[in-house]
Image 1 (cartoon, rainbow, N blue to C red):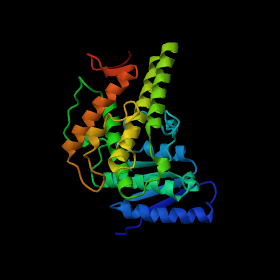
Image 2: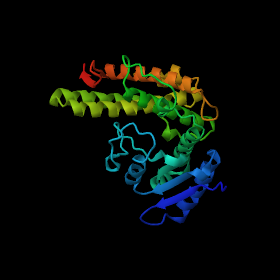
Image 3: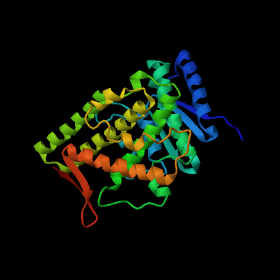
Image 4: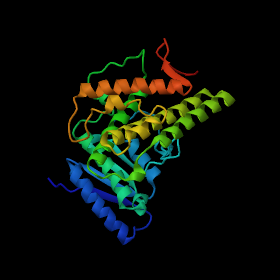
Amino acid sequence: MSSAMNVTYRVARDLPAAQQATWSNLLADFTAEVPNPEKVEVVITDEYEKVTGEYLVQEVDRSNDTMTAEQYRADRADGARAAAKTCVLPGDRIVVVASSGLVPYGIRPARHGLLHEAQHVRLHQHGDAAWALHRRAPFTLPEREITWEYLWLAESAIDEYRCERTVHDRGWTDPVNTVGAGDVAGVVATFRAARTAWDRTGDLMGAYHAAFASLDRMSKVLGYGAAGVVSGVIPAAAWAKAPVAGRILDVVENLPGTDALVPPEDLLAAAVEVAKRLRRILQEMGFDYFFTPDGGTYLKPL
C-alpha cells in the first residue's frame, strides 16, 4: 500500500512558486506525523469557509446535525478566525482543510497551525480522540449536572489541549499562535455582550447562540492555555491573572500529548469534569443551561 498522502489545491489561481515550495516542506513534515497518510487528504484552498463547510457536513460525528455547509463560519466569537480544520469522514477517511492564506504570514505560524492539525489526525487514527468518545464507549450522561452541549465542548477542549501540547513539546511553537490572559478577557467580553443583548431584546434564541459561541471559544482558549502552561511556553503566573483562566488546568495537566494513548474511561472522566466547569463558567457569565423535567433543555439568564 502506498504511504503517499493526497494533496489537493482548490485555488482560483496557482500559488506563487515560493509558496508552493513552502507548502511542500510543510506537507512533508505533516506526513511524517500521521500514522496512515494514505488515508488523509490535505485540501489547500483560498475559499476556506466554503470548502470546510462542504466537508464538515460529511463528518461521521457531528455535534450539530442540522448545520448546513453554508452556515459554517471561520470567525469565532472574539474575532479570532480559523484557518485549518480536520474533518473525519466515513470509511476512515480524514480531510484536513487549510487556508492558502496560512503561508504568506511565514513558515513558523504555518507550521504551528498545520502540525497542530496533524496531531488531530494522529488522535483519530489511533482511536484516541476525546471528540464523540461518548458515542464509541459506554457512557451515561449525568443529566442533573450537564447537557450534551457541555460534553461536546469539553471533548473538543481536551483534544485541543493534547494537540497543542504536542506542538509545544516538539518545539514547533509560534509565539503569535499562543494565547494569553488578554485572550481570556476578550472572550469574557463576548459573554458580557451576549448578556447585554439579552437585556435589551429579550431574544432567548439569540442569547443561546451567542452564549454558546462564547463558551465554545472559551473552551478552546482554556485548552490552548493549559497546553502552554504545562509545556512551559506560557508563564503560569501570567496565565493565572486572567479570570477563569485556570479552570480546567488541573483536570487536563496530567493528560499526555498525542504520543501516548489514554484509556477511554479516563478521557470520559476528564471530559465530564471539564463539562461541569464549563457550565460554571456560563453561570458566572450570566446564563445557565440545563435539562428541564420533561427532558427538554432551557437557557436561563441569571
